[in-house]
Amino acid sequence: MQLIDSHSHFDDASFAADRAAALARAHAAGVMAQIVPATHADGWAQLESVCSQHPGLYPAYGLHPVFLPQHLPAHLDALQQQLASGKPCVAVGEIGLDYFLDTLDRQQQQNFFEAQLRLALEFNLPVIIHARRAFDAVIATLRRFPGSRGVIHSFSGSLEQAKQLCKMGFMLGIGGPLTYPRAQRLRRTVTQIPLDYLLLETDAPDQPDSQWRGQRNEPARLLAILDTLAELRGESRETIAAATTANAERLFGIPISRISQSA
Image (cartoon, rainbow, N blue to C red; front, side, top):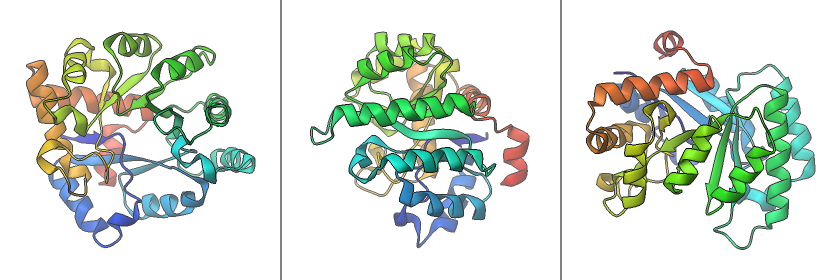
C-alpha cells in the first residue's frame, strides 16, 4: 500500500531532533508522501527548506486563521509572490475560519479567507481549509467563489454539511478524531459519504489517534486512521488506501509514480 498524509505539519519544531527517523517510520508504514501546509508567513522559509530537503514532502502556503494576530495585509502580497515564484506548491493553505476562539476577529478572518480563495483561483490551486465551529460560514463563503476546490481539514461537521461540501466538489480530511469511540457523529458520517470524497490525514504533531493519545503525533500513525475507516465502512484497508491515495493524487497533482520515485 502507498498512502498520502494529506495534512501534516512536518516542518514543526517538534520534529527537529528526529525528522529523518520520523520520515523513515512513515515510509515503513507505507506513507510515501505528505502535504505540508503553512500557518503563517514567518514560517514559509522553514517549510520550504524542510520540503526541499526531504523527497515526498509537498508544501502548501497560506495564512491560518488561528494565527490571525501575526498576519499583516502585506502578507497577502507576499503570498501572491510566493505562488507566482514557480517554486513547488500544491495548494493554498492552511486557510479558513475559526469560530472556536472568541479572541479572533471574525471579519478580519473573513477578509484573509476570501483574499486567499481569490489567489487560489488565480493560480488554479486547491485550498486546504480549517473550519472549526464555522462550517456554515465556510460553506456560504465557498458558494461565492465558484470553481474553488480543495479539502476541509479535520472535518467534524454534520452529514448535511458534508453532503453540501461534497456537492461543491470538496473533499473531507479524516484524521485522529475518527479513532475515538465518542466521535459518533463523525463515525456515522464517514460511512455515508462516497469514498471518492475522503482523504486521510494525521495533522501531525497534533490530533493523535486514540491509541497514541498524549504523544506527539506523526505521519506513521496514518495506519490507525486507515484501519478505523476500513472497519467502520466494512471495506478492506487496501480498498480504502487505494481510493484515498488516488483522491490525494487527483486533488494535489502528485502522481503515484512521482511519489514512488521521490521516496
